[in-house]
Length: 400
Image 1 (cartoon, one colour):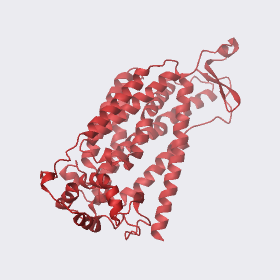
Image 2 (tube, helix red, strand yellow; image 1 turned 90 degrees about the horizontal axis):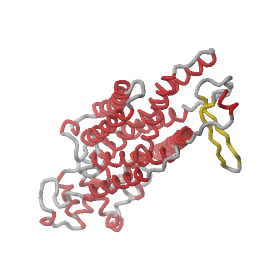
Image 3 (spheres, rainbow, N blue to C red; image 1 turned 120 degrees about the vertical axis):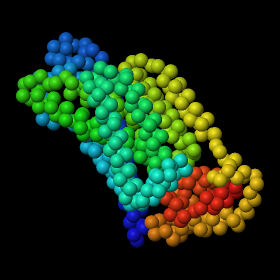
Image 4 (cartoon, one colour; image 1 turned 60 degrees about the vertical axis):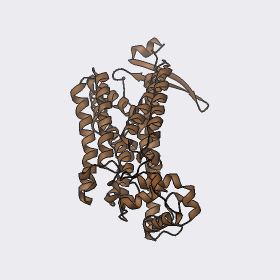
């Protein structure tokens, strides 16, 4: 019953996280499209009352007329729409899942193939502390870059380059401190934390100050509007990379690779430049070069991913010199895998085999041969090496 309830909690938490994320991202993308698609108002009366831009649209059988005011409108309605709870709910549910499925089992975050020795040797509380500091540190560094490089939103090009360098560093550090799965998720969480913190610390407080000034009959500080737009634009470029990083734990071809940090950085940049194409398209400028650049980055990542040291084991023993039988492989499955990956798992955390893979069946083991090799040889499985699988035992799987 405990395993069943844990799995239900997992399902419901993930569902809420996805619902909030879809709502937040959808609304964010819509407003970026709206802001970039505004045109100068045609009616003189609209220009006189302060309308900066307008958009006419058709959707769902109806026509919409959106207008944006450059300054305060004559009167603000009481039912002014705010956008923040979707962002907060996305982060809170994401961090809740991180606590439930990683911080309660910190060993699952360590022992990666590329991890530094000191990182692989961390105990449970040290791992959790480093993971939380990693999230907070990412936000602090990003926020300081914004404040110091472009405080008045006049050097955003330089700031974008600095944030790109930061993400390369984050990708490198995460894959050398944490296990493959955890590294990709934590990098995504660094970006997601920055997105939510942008809303919490800058966008919403700035909007509240603007509304307060308008209601008091005062002119709002233009920096609040500029800064809110700056952080909102950053969020839209983070969106596609974060979505990929959040689903990356299903693809060991990414996180188990010895050059995983390069793959991660390439795909982050691919998502950002592809998003740039759509941002410009909404502004009336179609520049397919950005789509082409994104495609090139993805192709480069595919090329890097095809480079592998599979011809060698962890000890440098040529694979060709090792002869391994199916019996030896199933022996390792029995010792290290079937506690979870079985039709009836003995591990109480699972009521069914994870991802549907039951390795107490030889036919399934044969079907998933390549995936098993990547996971075991890459140090990803067993999770946190909870069964103390030795390098020699990993070599058995690698040789097979």
